[in-house]
Image 1 (tube, rainbow, N blue to C red):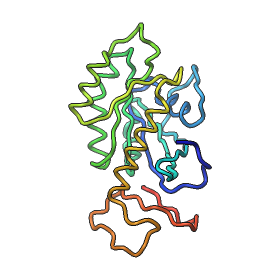
Image 2: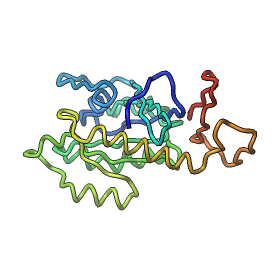
Image 3: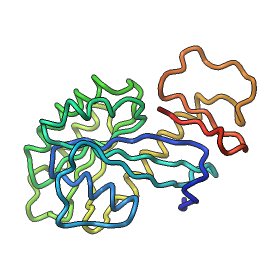
Length: 214
């Protein structure tokens, strides 16, 4: 898989980052999209997003990644941003058990507001803080399995598994989408009547006719 030109893509997937304030969502976003990390990162106000394209099976996948503020007072604002999302990274801090306890509430909110087929990955961030670990890996892994989530531990600080986390979720979304896909190049084939907000159509070669998931 390699980076491709950002202005040419076959699929556009919206992915949201959710979880408590301070778990490192903004730095996961900046590490993946710009390979940057900011120790002085301020709390996100409202919503920010960034994009990056990757290649899967010869197709260019452009990820539009939304960073939703974790503070309670912004939750009413951010709930609208689940709409159209095909993937979600549910992030907690491995050194703060409360952020892990709140994962269940975030998951409930996600399932209330997002499409039922959204692909969800549980992410234990700040794995570099091994000496301060408050959430055992096995415990989080078991929670993920019970709730049919994929699971990974990352560190935005030292880049551990950040690339892998985003590559994995985008690849999983692509595999699901391509299985229920209309034939390539948007032929006049009948469209499935159950097409929901996350049905993605491949683009043709005309460029401006790109289709978007949301």
